[in-house]
Image 1 (cartoon, protein in one colour):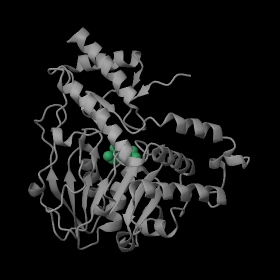
Image 2 (image 1 turned 120 degrees about the horizontal axis):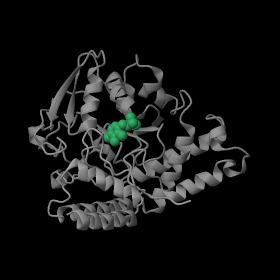
Image 3 (image 1 turned 120 degrees about the vertical axis):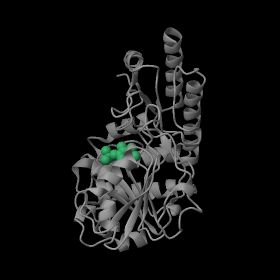
Image 4 (image 1 turned 180 degrees about the vertical axis):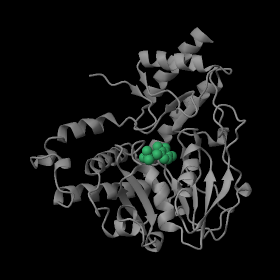
Amino acid sequence: MSRIWNFSAGPAALPEVVLQQAKEELLDWHGIGAGIMEVSHRGKHFTEVIKEAEADVRELLVIPAHYRVLFLQGGATLQFAAIPLNLLAADASADYLITGAWSKKAFADAGKLPLAGKLCLAANMEDKNAPASGFTRLPEPEAIALNEKAAYLHLCGNETIHGVAIHDDAWLDGALPSVVPVIADMSSSILSRPLDVARYGLIYAGAQKNIGPSGLTLVIIREDLCARAANNVPAPISYKMQAENDSMLNTPATFAVYLAGLVFRWLKEQGGLTGMAAINRVKAMKLYAAIDASQGFYRNHVAISCRSNMNVPFNLLTPELEAEFVREAEAAGFMGLEGHKSVGGIRASIYNAMPVQGVEALLLFMADFMRRRG
Ligand SMILES: *Cc1c(COP(=O)(O)O)cnc(C)c1O
């Protein structure tokens, strides 16, 4: 068996030691004579697993006691609908910030629903004339049209496709009325750095980037929002009912919860999120430095202050050269480097499970490719 350097955007690489442990426990978890995915979600074994997973993720993110942690299904995408259905009352409005493909999709999906409340565009950073990608920066906080009575402001913490990220949770302070809860899609940045959870009303993340296998969605919701959630929402997406039932309203994605729990434990062993953030910054800095030093052979178009530490998209001079880069990279043992089909180019996703050595190996390949093709 040989594992290769996996730069996939999601589902993405998982820590090898976690996969080893899951392999060892697959047929017989903790000597019970069955795998953890083969036992009742209401039995004592799985209850132990999900309780420990919650305790560990609470510890890692320092989640305050007045927040609920939910392990749901349907991916981040289902949350695009669940959020307004739960939290947008008939006479209310909600603000949306569009900074890339995912926040754009969240706004579009909400717009398809027969909502009684109103959806407002607080800012749209799409620039059809921008090179390659169309989204290259965050708005200035003062330039955002915020409604002080909004039920919530929705934003995306890390735009996985365009590589535009919010690095500072206090970014909107001053511009945002303190009573408006911020709802953040953190699918591709959760657990990559310490997070000031108290600044958010709701944080959600599909698991397959930085948590574990697909099929699991983490939702962290402030208790008052959970209590305020509408009653006429289908049970699986009702925050109130899921919280009342400890995410066991119906069968949760048990194996995914178990694996996420192993990842949480692994993160604690890496020094928690402060340690992880330091490693992530090193990886991203090395990659951007090489791109910026290539005299235009490799180009990243995102404003420096909002460059993502998780997803590094870049372009070469022509689509043909980019295709050749991906082909040769694959032959040299690198997986998942093609950009999202909507924007093309190259994208290196460097989540927690990608070690510094993987990035260094990619840099050697990039230097060699440039020497031959530059
Ligand atoms: C991957 C991703 C999604 C979609 O997640 P699914 O779990 O596939 O629904 C949404 N938002 C962001 C920021 C993502 O990276």
